[in-house]
Length: 319
Image (spheres, rainbow, N blue to C red):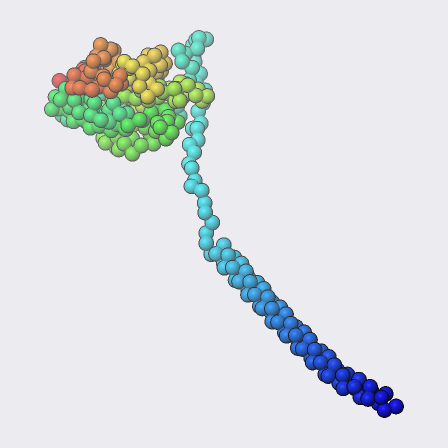
C-alpha cells in the first residue's frame, strides 16, 4: 500500500505541472487569437475607411463634372454660310423659232441700253475686274493713255469672277460679293470698264454640273445692269479677256475664245454695253505676258490700256 501511495504521489506531482503548462498554452492561444482578431478588425476598418474615402472622392468628381457641364457652354462648330442660287426666269425668243446663240435665262433687272450722252468737263472712269485690273496691269496706264479730262480709278479684285458662284482657291470670289463692287457702284463714275471672265474660264468654274456657261451670261448681265442703273447712270464697256498664251492656274485660251468671249458678246448685245476687243489687241504680245495671262512689262500693260483708251475716246469724242 505504501508503494501505491508513492506512485499516486508521483503522478500527482507530474499532472500538476502538465495542467499548468496546458493552461499556459491555452492562454497564449487565446491571446494570439485575440490579437489576430484585433488585427483583422483593424484591417477591415482600414479597408472600409479607404472605400469610404474613394466613394467620397468619386462623388465629388461626379459633382464637379456635372457642375462643369452645366456651366461650361458646349463647343460649337463654325457656321459655314452657303450661297443660294438667285431665282431666274426663262427667256423667250420672239419672231423666230431658232434658238439664241447661247441659250440663257434673263436677269431680274430690266434692260437699259447704252445711249449717247454728254459728259462733263471731267470724265470719271471706273475700272472693274480681276487681278489683271487689280495689280496695276492696265488701269494705271489707262490714266496716261487718256487726256487730263479723265480721272481713272481702279476697283480690281484678285481672283474675282463674274459668276455668282465663282471660286478661287476654294473660296467664293464673285465680284459682286467684294467691297470693291460696292465702292465702284457709289464712285459716281461716268464710264465703267468691266474686264472679267478670265477666272470664270477655270475648269472648276466653267465645267461644273451647274451649267455655268449659261449662268455666266445671267450673272454678267446682272452685273452690267447694276452699273447701268447706278445713280450716275454710267456708260458700260465690256472688255474681252486678254489672250492667254499658255495654261495658267487652269486658265486656257481655248475656253476663253470658244466659250467666254461668245458669252460676253451676247451680254453686250442684250444690255447695250460697248465691247472692247482687248483679246485681239493682245494676240501678238506673247513676249509681254511671261506667265501667259498677266502683262509682265510696260509694253504689255500699254497694249491693254491703249485698246481701252481708244474705245473710250471713240465713244466720248474727247481726246
